Amino acid sequence: MTGSFGPPVPPTFQEMWRELLPLGRHSGSGGYRRYAWTGADTECRAWFAAQAERRGLRLDVDRNGNQWAWLGDPADGDAVVTGSHLDSVPDGGAFDGPLGVVCAFAALDELRRREGRDGTRRPRGRDPFPRPLGIVNFGDEEGARFGLACVGSRLTAGQLTRDRAHRLTDGDGITLPRAMEAAGHDPDAIGADPERLARIGAFVELHVEQGRALDLSGDRVGIASAIWPHGRWRFDFRGEANHAGTTRLADRRDPMLPYAETVLAARREAELAGAVATFGKIAVEPNGVNAIPSLVRGWLDSRAADQTSLDTVVAGVEKAARVHAAAHGVDLDVVRESRTPVVDFDHALRDELARILGRKRDDGQAPARIPVLGTGAGHDAGILSSSIPTAMLFVRNPTGVSHSPAEYAAEDDCLAGATALADVLEGLVHG
Image 1 (cartoon, rainbow, N blue to C red):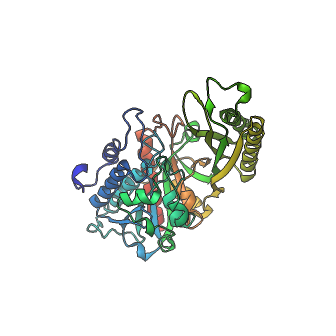
Image 2: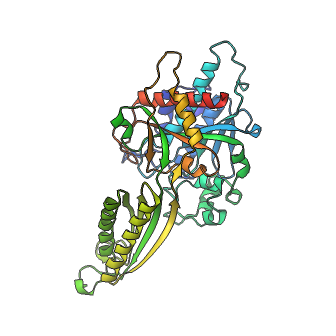
């Protein structure tokens, strides 16, 4: 398994990054198409397995397809786990998800180096950590293929039932069970995994910041305070297909018109509430240049700092959509596909991270402060927060761009993130 990825020795952060970089990259856009249960996903999983093997870690793939690499026996309980995901949005960037996984392996390597400084380093597989350490790659975090984010962690936490998961379908009509089976995984085994979660004492996810707060403050690393409540809603505008060249404007029931007006309404409602709202995906039937559509289906993504603001935005968008649909003789169905309440990360764990990162290291250097910031982006850590103590670290993104090939983090900042994660893991495993 390690042959295609280089020699069986732990590579550096830079070497791991170079190995992972070409996997799932789209030649046209320069972005990534690492969709769940595809060939690109299989390559990323093989990369993860190779990293575990190089370090003598025990690889475990759970019933939901999430990969776990263990140092120590998780059955001992109170394990400290870090990691993120390797899948991407359509034509996404290189850092969203993968940075957390690469930094996890780099942080573990740093911990082992530290333990060997005083000559007490033990043989491989018997590292002197009093708590088990795990690195995880959660499956289908972005939801790019089946339309639901964080499928792997939702299933594990019991927030997604097997029946509902089995009904998920991609744009080509392939169901989630069929895709999983084609990739060699048993779709009938998926479901809640409370025993696994009960063995975890803390989960810390490192992620590139999807915004510019750290860049504006001049900090390389920050701690997450909360995840904004957010959700996805599907708006189905149903009109009447007809000829684009022969149908009078007055005789048309064109669903594209109320859809366009609804997009503008979403922007207005978001501005009024200090929130965000985006129609970023659309499907049109019959999708012909010379045909009036019979159906325009648009997906609304909306997020706000609090639930009341989010509810206000979505209610305002739906009200506007219904008014515009009625004005054009178009029917409208609105379906809530997902909704995630506000996630306020575990205060005790968050405070512990701040305490650990605020300590002076051997070189006498310590950051003057540890910035704490909220985020509008969803994460596996947010899903797991209802089951186990979770926390997040963010690495500076100088442009603030994410979900785009232009997503970026400087190498020095990435290495600072890996070091901060090593500090956190060291502090947690040793108490």
